[in-house]
Amino acid sequence: MADYGFLNLLSLIGAVGLFLYGMKIMSEGLQKAAGDRMRSILSAMTKNRFAGLFTGIFITALIQSSSASTVMVVSFVNAGLMSLADSMAVIMGANVGTTFTAWIISIFGGQMDVDVLILPLIGLATPFLFSKKSTYKSIAEFLIGFAFLFLGLQFISDNVPQLDADTTAFLRNYADMGFLSVCIFLLAGIVITMIIQSSAAAFAIVMIMTMKGWISFEMGCAMVLGSNIGTTITPILASLGANAAAKKAALGHLLFNCFGTIWALAFIYPLVSLVGVISQDIGPGNPINTVGNAAAITFGLSVFHTIFNIINVLIMIWFTKTFVKICNFFIKPKKKDDEEFQLKYISRGMLNAAELNIAQAQQEVIVYAERVDRMFGMVKALEHTKPNTEEFNKLFSRIEKYEEISDRMEIEIAKFLNNVVDGRLSFESKMRISSMLNIVSEIESIADSCYNLARTMVRKHDASVVFSDNVADNVDNMFNLVSEALDNMLLVLRDMENANEKEIMASYNKEREINNYRNALRAENVDNINHKLYPYEEGIYYMDTICESEKLCDYIVNVIDAVKTQTPYADN
Image 1: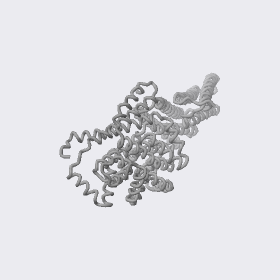
Image 2: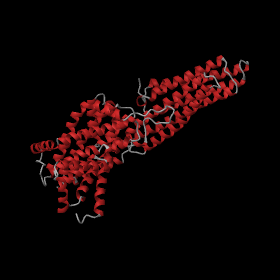
Image 3: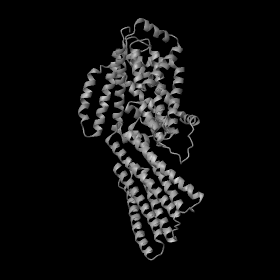
Image 4: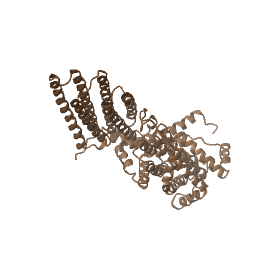
């Protein structure tokens, strides 16, 4: 180790970086290829704890990253698409699914010469990179990421230092302290995994350390246990800027892994002995006290990782409700005034799984639309509130506050969507984000129209104009039609990925009805003023109110048009 210099250290760090980069683009390639299907699987296959368990196993085995799948779960909880209890089952499944990654690393990294696979894999993927179809490009990224992962693994093995006798003796001193040594190496596994934020990379490092004889097989198993706690750092970081539900999901993941590690630590020696027996009977040999048998060591570590996670899930799956209660006890949702600016589902801290962030954005758009719908309800109430009263002034101030919040929500949601679109996304997802940007802009225009209506009422009262009974009835009828249009818009937005022809046509029909009503009232207004049924000034405020209401409905139809461009609606 005396000849191991700074350049060698940089090479080792670069090798770990290449491994992590390969894991990242492999995972993102699969997420992009799966796209909507992955979101559908996660949201549909969590009807009970066992369905959620198998969903977590399947998704994690597919995308090769328990951190990515757990962040997806946190994102779904944050977006209100998954309950905390359901998320716990999926997280448990993710821990089992990550053993699939360990087996791949063990088989390819420890027992096969990957040189013969790396360049052919990249060569196979290269033509797909130039395909016009986004799915083929995503598959190419997956294959290249797969090649980079094992190229990085090979570089890690080549660039770790060769320990001299003094260094080996130093490590042995820490490895010969009985159960205390197990705790020390478990802590080392936690720290390494927290730093690199990948249990798969940590497993690869532990495998190489054990194969090279730096540490015993028992200490390698202890580090693998530690990596199960260290990997919780990624979803914890992802949940920091999220809502209380997402924080609870991240805490549940931490508790699950901690409790599992505690019982496994208590039975570490029986578990290691069981792994030795299994490896001896069906594997390449007993990894305990083995020197030079790389196949036995890598096989044994994978068996230990798998057995621990399977037993842990079989125990903990029955305590899902208990985990939920603990999380609810420690994390209380903050009670916020509805008139404070807040984003409910999205935050900068959640940009970890680009495809899944779309679901969060969709939920936030619905919250935005519901807020603007409440704003129009205030406008209707203002019309029937006595002017120059505290109630009238307070209601108008609320409408002003809502208009300010609307402007800020538009900016924040648009920023979030622009950040998401900069990530690795499928073409379909980018089109969906483009559509949502249009929807957000139109919802803000609806809020502006609501504010304009309220200002018209204030000017009307300042001018001491009072609508006659017939005019007031017509305004109420127009407001009711607009309310119906808003209700239908919310119905479409709440299931925008599955909008059907009936709902779409209802919005268009309502818009035509409002246009016809506006035209009829405008013609009638001219006739009434000519016959001096009410003053000209009253007619001005009357038509300002009617025309602004019709303009508001135009923005509603623009929202519906944007939904249509996002997902072609199904015929009923």
